[in-house]
Amino acid sequence: MSAETELYALLSGAAGLTALVGTRIYPDAIPEDAVLPAVVYARASTEPVLSVSGHKFAETARLTISAWAKTRTSAAAVGDQVEAALLSAWQPALDRSSVFDGEVGLYAATVASDWFTVS
Image (cartoon, rainbow, N blue to C red; front, side, top):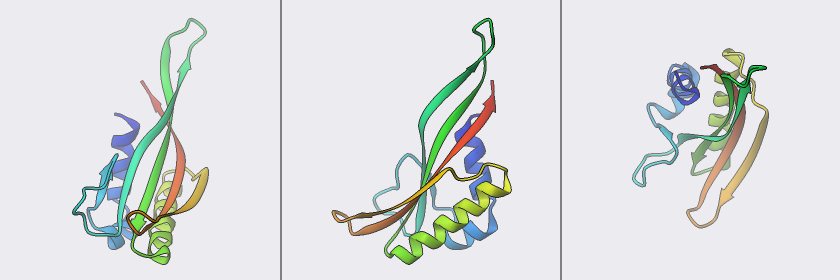
């Protein structure tokens, strides 16, 4: 199972998060006509875990999860629920940042987490 599949299962099963975004949890990009708030996740990088003989037996994927909303307060509330969901699976947030996209007039709270998966 991929890190993204595991992350989606975790996020879509988190009651606190789904109370705010419902099923609006998307890979890579939010659809143009999506209702907000919504969550988008993507793989930022992958680091292979190799054996002494060079065989890849696992990987650590850096995943970014962004909560997009019309207000900073709403984006932060969804971001808090993303962090809570990650922590419940022993995948703590490593970084959190806030963004305002002036071009579309939306706020985001972005969380990064490293996800370890065995090949």
